[in-house]
Image (cartoon, rainbow, N blue to C red; front, side):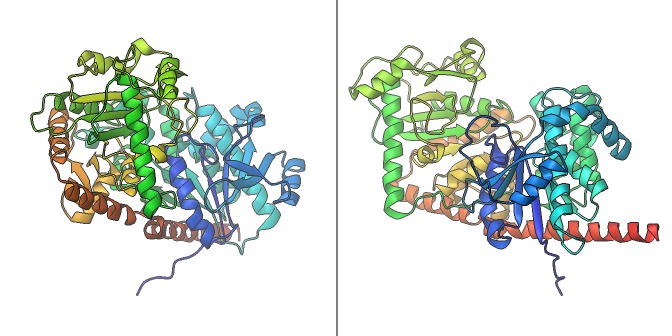
Length: 560
């Protein structure tokens, strides 16, 4: 007989990426919000940093009336400066943005208390640690203020903290409002990411690494400390995939209580005739860009492939992607011209005026622009990893090359000055995407790709790749919509060859075979909708509520 899950009456969820689009966590929270808002209508509150002070935030719609009495109380009694409104995403949940600047004055006292209470070591803090910690502490104070003003012991309340940046607030509530049940999600361990990013073998030696020792060696002691201590002390510790749970077990010495796989909503994917139109338009835009940059006509049946994500050259497998493209230039099996995009935000300067002029002219050109590899100038043109590797491999987009590579080093937000279309409005025009990740706790980019019926290639070092394999009870292949390549610490060259062969084989498929493949890719995306994955969150809430209730009952007995 299945146990009845405890359900929260209120949920508070904090993240640096609430109303603040930085990376993948924004996608997790913003797509899941609608599902939770449908169940907990206006009883879920997202708390984010008010980092847009003085500037208009397009993701936040302020509402002066919403929660106004408490907001006034929070300012007068608790000295908390807040803005309350709605997050401008599907579901329009309540968002609370907190100004945390005033807490810097008492930073040392906050850190000293965290050490005394939970052995959190903030001594070696640098970079973004202080800013994240002051926000996190402020978010905890916000929840404490709301709880004491509006709620009682009878209300079942969850506080869900995301990433090490929000750990301090979770621990603050654990001590000061113990009746609130705390959930902590690490989306990637800070030490695991550092090991991978510093070119140390992560997977073969994972069992031998000591997290504390490696944090000292790689100078991430404070981030590692807050992450580890939060994982040990909260009521329910979670992560996003089995592969990241291995890191948690070894490096944080605490396995997750529940795995929270990352789903998404597909309401941004067009349907029917609109899908067909948008795909044609996106494809035409990408080919037109290539023709103007390269000064040559692109074949109508050219394959458009791409990679995207954060600029983590090794971790995201950008190096492997470029190696694949280089090898494809010599592949006799390749049956189509390839236009390959690298959509990775770099240290971008200005949109290229010469390219802009060509795009606006509507004319055809038969000579390439200077440096026909990139759409925007960079501040560090001579020290950019993508350009450096292309130079090393002698990839110059010559007219006779079957493979042309175009680096788009900016956020595709519709205002980049060259393409002026959003990422989702462009990815739909691709034929294939490639994400040869070395370190990828989940992997939203391949999931977004298949949502637009674009088959994708990823690896089994990505949480999404492992999940795709689990659907097959074996290895997923491109004929299933997702090709999952086996990757280890040392098989870089083998991975590049396997991906090269997969792309070459794809170029030989008939139109009917391609359409079947695209449909299968879309079917995989359907299995990852939040309506399927949200049950894991309800399980985590149940674990947290039960542990909080048990803790409170022990405290009551001790005080009798």
